[in-house]
Length: 377
Image (tube, rainbow, N blue to C red):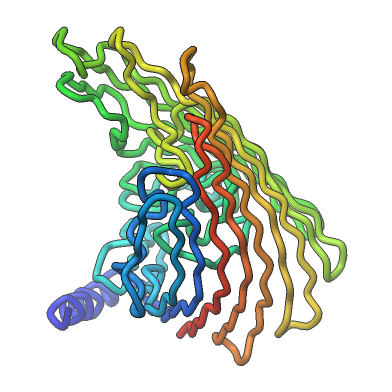
């Protein structure tokens, strides 16, 4: 880590005079402290991951119909340190998390006032424009701070065109990651994930609309567990919000097919939104949709409240016993308190109901009380 910091500093000292770049370093330290109560329902597997690896108080016990609770007390993976490097016509940004993993590393060329080319690892178009939920919980059993029903991709290696004075239209070609179980089949990838988003910004009203598409070839060898059918994955969504003075309302709705394949954030506990190979060697696609509604009120510059409800539904295209919807409902409410500039304390209460899976089996639920502690510097 020390060598990495010295190397970055050396590059900055060499490059700054030559390119007249402005280096703006920043960091964010984040700790989550929470109590979580899990109920596995009737599921025969641990749909909540392995909480015992994260909890300091106990090891989870998941026998049939068991439940478990405990305390999570750890630094969040969203803690980061980085820098914005400003110049004309070239600028960039890098960001590392607390595990010295690369969150962001990109360079940008300003072709003209309305067109920029960005190269490297960056937020995808369906990520940077879709932080609609302020849900803070982040553990092995939930979708993370994005919230259920929030259409959300992530970061990834990409070539991106940004069109507009701001970032109104983003079009990106992104590295794909096969999520489906392709067994003994040969997988051939001939195209990147294509993703685009348009955002209309405004002080009183804003909306955003976008989508993602990917296709790859899967050639089976005629044996069992070797699917022989191409995978097509896509998603489209629309979101927006309205401000009423100190109050606001935000939300979105999306629909897609095999959305895990285009890296839309879901959790395996909430149902795998990837195609499943059937006995004929074809794929049973997962039809996926979700919705989110968030409302909040800012009392002062230092204090605000927010609550939200999210819904996700996944359904396989089968005609057998697994033809049920796999649904999830999630609820949260929190107080966002700014104790000092750069200092945030966010207590939150929430409940997640995994409802039934594709087999009609109750997957359980979770109740949590959490406080997120964050200092930006």
